Image 1 (cartoon, rainbow, N blue to C red):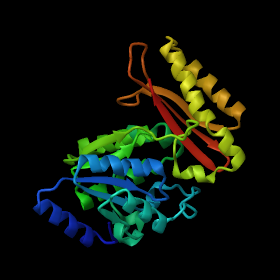
Image 2 (cartoon, rainbow, N blue to C red; image 1 turned 60 degrees about the vertical axis):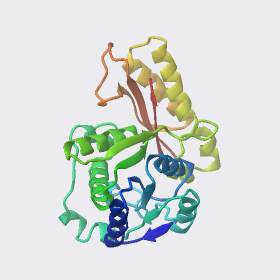
Image 3 (cartoon, rainbow, N blue to C red; image 1 turned 30 degrees about the vertical axis):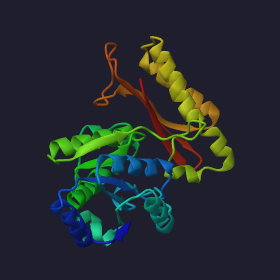
Image 4 (cartoon, one colour; image 1 turned 30 degrees about the horizontal axis):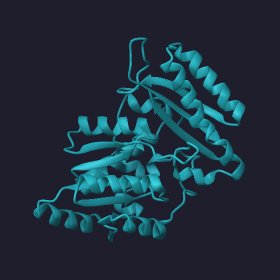
Amino acid sequence: MRTVHTIAELRAQVAAWRQAGERVAFVPTMGNLHRGHIHLVERAREQAPRTVASIFVNPTQFGPNEDFAGYPRTLAEDARQLKAAGLDVLFAPPVAEIYPRPLEDMTAVTVPELSGILCGASRPTHFRGVATVVGKLFNMVQPDAALFGEKDWQQLMIIRRLVEDLNFPIEIIGVPTVRETDGLAMSSRNGYLTSQERAIAPALYATLSASAQRLRAGERDYQRLADDAKAALAAAGFRPDYFEIRRAGDLKPPSGEDTHLRILAAAWLGKARLIDNLAV
């Protein structure tokens, strides 16, 4: 595995692969990797003979009171895991390589409609930061395919819309959420949980599963289902942010005739904000 820190190094390597006619798959991350990230890399290797992953803690997707400064930076351990997974190139740029001017002077990318709901309602600048950095990384790497976990379903929908609207010739592949044995979705922020909170955390997935079971049984009072779920989460010790049932394809509120749904939830547990979702 080769580690590069500049766009010029990255582009030179990708150009050599292109000259050889090789397909390239890309996995963007913020580091502090867990088994879910490594699974994305393993899936990427199934998609293309050449693979790139990025590690970049992106300042523009953190709000003013969020955990940018304290977000774990574990580059040496991350690189060890990625090398063991068979990655070809790790792109680990400094902030100045991605944003060479003050952030407020840099061009930004916004994806309207999808960015202002759910997580975007409580984190109003988050998805602008995500769309901007993903758009920049796509231009830097120029992959044939890019892989994202389905744990953040809203983010996946936004990136698909970004690619469609801006005509990136990139296949976006969603990869099912990797879970712990007790159902908790793997996340870098799970490391913020105390041992007591970690014992409570699987209740988020259990609550999603209970709501999914009620939907499959024929219930269609979406508001009641959401209210019951938020009450259950609060009783378990969470501070619910949202619990919503939406159409899977566009995240609009469903009607009684819709058959492909996503239940999406975000809730605070101590200092960790956990997100998860289920298909129904």
